[in-house]
Amino acid sequence: MYVLDTTVISALHKNYYRSRFVSLWKQFDMLVDSGMITSTREAYRELHDGAGADTDWAKDNASLFTTPDATEAGFVARIYAVPHFQANIERQKLIKGGRNADAFLIARAFAVGGTVVTLERLKPNAVKIPNICSHFQIPFLSLEGFMEKEGWVF
Image (cartoon, rainbow, N blue to C red; front, side, top):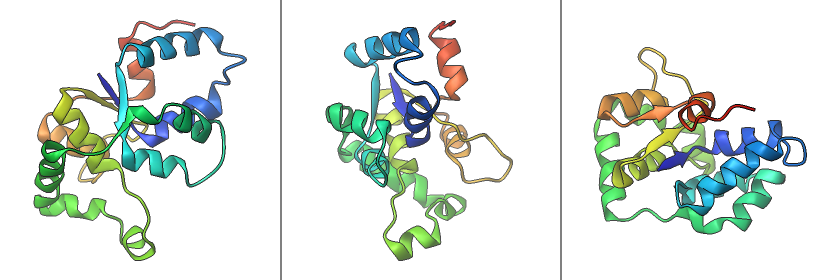
């Protein structure tokens, strides 16, 4: 199962228009229909910060965006128990009430035995999704890595 970051959902819709990349979307929709794609309520909320094809898709596929269960909530607590990862909660987001789906996406992947798909890159000493995933040994892929794993060639 793949747990999609907001950045991936947005990039798919902004860079791969459904009317131009028909075969990509056919493959993607098959994964959605087979239950291989999921995300979180927090990612759903991030997508609704603006209008666009990604927001419309999220509304049409709202059931993919799950509410964290007890296992996921417990894992979010484990993530933020690591002092270095507390910096993942950006100060401005806390002050302005912004959204932060990162820990919830990782917790979802942990709970379902899935792989996080993100546009973020692994950087030394960073507090990005790949760094947190690496720390907890949770698989993660880039968008291109996801396409490669699925064997997509267009």
